[in-house]
Figure 1 (cartoon, protein in one colour):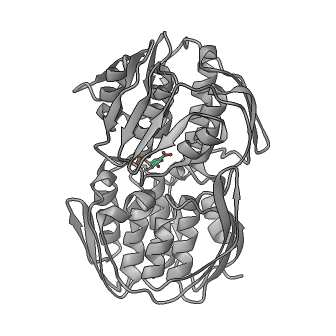
Figure 2 (cartoon, protein in one colour):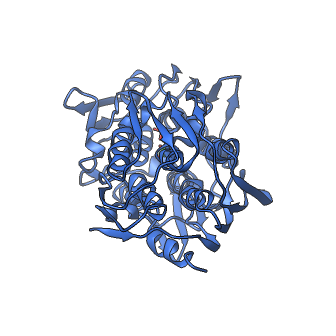
Length: 427
Ligand code: S3P
């Protein structure tokens, strides 16, 4: 499906972004592992989170999603049952990697697969350590791709040195570690998002932290009511559009401000953006607040690899901002983007070039000479929700009409994004 956008002179208004996708996945999975009834609200009703819920149902977990409240009945890990069918994680690597961690400790065999994009994504990073803990896991192709066949059983703890700074990998190991008979220590990975650690602590897991290490012991989890903040990654598209379109003024309410997710805000501030935080508070171990954003002329930035994990999903969007900023914007150390829902470095460079951007693709990032005058044209989402929405932001800054093909992938994380954008124009 194509979606068309025109350049706009400003974005104005107040908006509440959808609930956090990462925290929604975690609430569902940790709620299923806990003892008792977990109520998580507002739960994100999007493609990825529904993939997690459907897999949990296949695994014998009862839940109901009424309005925006997820109620999940947990009876501990022992309540997971062998599925009758292949589990389908859809487009969601979070679903696959997290469930692999859970299933590694369950003494039945299951197979988990996903859509065409997910079946290309690297799983060796979880297969190797979960095997060392005692699970039998086989992948496809070279042994590292989905579908994964998992035969779980009694696990023992391991020490694991993280090769990539990935929240999904460390979470998979913590979920296996919860079920292991000795402690599991994960070294590295502390700068990737820490929602799992925060929620595990909230639910009473035995977790301790060293300088660059996390140690988890076998623990049972207590069910909780969990209030989920707005998703910083979804907010980022609206923030990006407002900072680069002069005359914009936007108030975003109740956005998650977890420091491991808010890297994009500090990068924008370094580029000269006008973003003010208000009503900061912490609920259920997660910080949140309101953001007031105004449009202004930004300057380019050199982004180094250490800043990438706290804004991993926002890096393609930074390419769009770089197009509008004065001077050079260069990103390096973001090679992980090549193994996301699409090769996000290649995808964003190719599509922005079609719109007239002076952008060079680097092995682990990109470099842009700004400012650019973007021209609307036909571009492609590459079936990737974050690329589709980043291109919509570019389209709002461009002359003439832009048509984005494969728009339906936006439902993975931000259903109704186009209507929200529409409602903020010309107010
Ligand atoms: C996620 C972690 C990130 C991110 C993904 C969601 C999570 O992936 O890109 O959209 O919920 O833990 P990696 O951990 O592989 O970097």
